[in-house]
Length: 213
Image (spheres, helix red, strand yellow):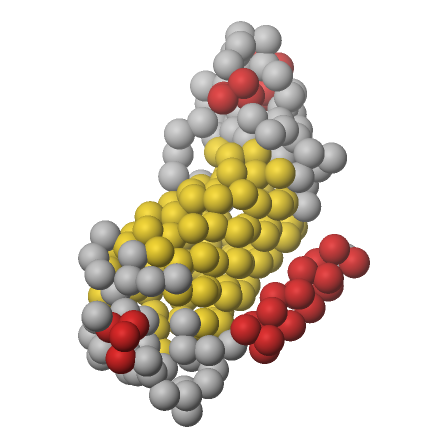
């Protein structure tokens, strides 16, 4: 809990100190689900509600830095699958609440000027490094795809589908199945799908014409 509070304070403080025409802060809401030894390929399995915040610094028309923090629930049950191997069927159902934080770089496929042109839009990809409060190895690799759209000169909305690769096999409690040797499959994953709305704080500031060139 102390780590979560520190991260929230840092995000809020940074947004106030650096707030300018390139910065946006907002909220995210959607769903999450997990991949692992119990669920190997079913998307949106046992979805949990996900909610959080986003701070985005738009470097230029193509790149942006983003810091996010999400709360969600991951769950699963071996009884939902009939084709599990013996050492996985022995695993128990789980239901875990986690905090996810990620620092990512976004690349816009189209030139995108945030909060300047109404209905300006772009698809994008993102990747970076993250944290998950799920084990003694909390590091994750977050990456995803998304779409963002300027609704007004102060509000942007969009949606994103992202994935988190963890470096542990402890989300579902089924650790290192005997017939799977690959660390890619042994390590558990989880995913987010949702919408976001971000807001430009200091909309009274004059936009710099050079930014739109």
